[in-house]
Image (cartoon, rainbow, N blue to C red; front, side, top):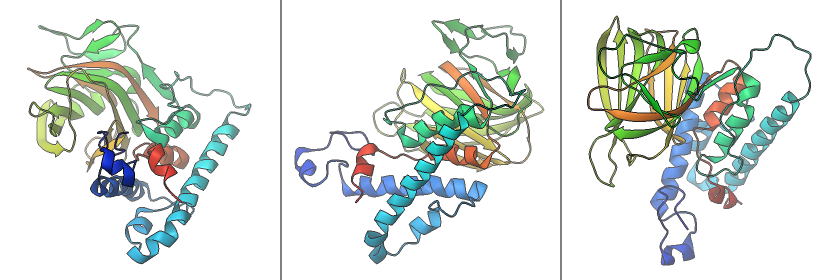
Length: 328
């Protein structure tokens, strides 16, 4: 048995008390992380559906009331999930609408929950029904990726995997404003880098997922900055409570809406920041000197409806199956 928070094995004596978490602290941290993701989503979008639990109702509950209200919260969450699944089913009914935007299929849904959780499953199921989704697996090479003429190393493609070099922007995404970017990649050397809200090659927001030091302890950092008129500005580096490894797949999701940007790694919310200088632009990848990474696929989904916004943020909250089963 492994801990639902840190994924480490649970000791034999601990299993007699708790089969889901290796310690009481990790049980509390998982609940806190889920509440934090709900808070980010609520503060960003201002949920109006009173049937759903808000972060304030979770964090402001008095200790003596938690035992009595826990079952009520659980019932509310499951009722909300049932409503979402019903909407998915209704959306699959035949429609007479014409002129719908053509979209490539989104990444396969995780029907068994697993590490990405129930939110990931719901997000994948409803993704193609709420908005157009563009997906790139690089089978056609780089014909849709705009970059500067190279005098040195350029992007390479081998075995269906791309190794970025200088920045390239995905041309079908450059007209978008509010969307969700998702991709699967690996860090080969030092970091994995991406860009969003890039109207061209001289203006964009940039983020790096960085291995800051070798070893099994938390060794991750997140670097973010903005490039305006070809000049980098305001680089910030933040530590992350993660352990990154070379050659390991990481699923990164970036929610871009208005002036607010949320980033999650393997379903865990790791960054939230705001900026108003770039209002429109597409996604891209790059690697700077001394860095190397691999990108396997990328998808971009426009998210304009309230339902789509809600579902996209369910995927930022971990709902381990074992933890849900322990609720009364």
